[in-house]
Length: 314
Image (tube, rainbow, N blue to C red; front, side):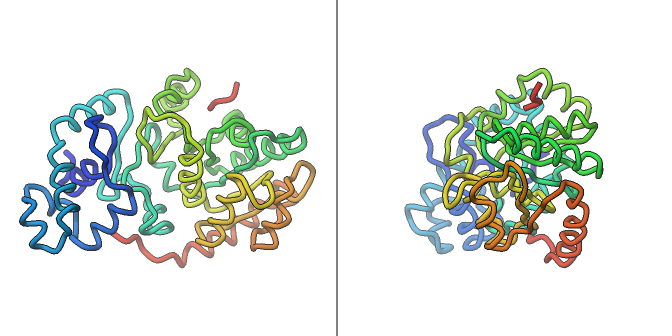
């Protein structure tokens, strides 16, 4: 049974109902929570009530309209649940505590996930990089995937062509576990027989903050990047462009926000942005075996985190 805070969150933020309503963005939602308190308290209230409590008239009207979508949303949630996709909010058990602690108000208000949810809160290794990776870069990506598996840690990545898929598939073939955060359709990803088998065997979880059947966009790829970093203890950029591109923007954001310990591959196949990222604070990684040492430092860092605030496989 979904609690009132969780239900109100889904109604206010989700785009699943296909009713033409424009839901709140995650940043708008968290501002509303800061102003009005737990979202469950908004259920059943009129526009006049909300205006009297301090909400602007246009926001009060939008909130009441979005909260009236309960019937349509119930059908969508049931459809997803039957397909094995759970819809988690920060008010649900199973929502990753790492996202609470590391992203704060930047955490997604909704996370759709299928598979072994427990992997989302385990220490893990993120591996990211270019879609058009060189042959040497591909070798490095695969070696990092195998190293994560040998350490018994989930390999976390974006399931995109190139570095992501190479590292994830190598980890899986080495007997490890995998966390995928795709920017394309979660529903389409789950149609893959290999992914379904991995989900069934408890060796993977696939999650997205976007509507499960939405298509790829550059904006979604950029937006989901912070989840890869926040779910990882260490994220390694195998090949980054210098000053542009998704790997560069995600890595620089992770360094600024201290989402995880950031590392860059400094060896054959590295990208032109790897050295500049090291100068910005990323750690140099010249051999996959160095992951264990870097992970030791990351664990020491995160022991001091503040408590939560409230075939290519892919």
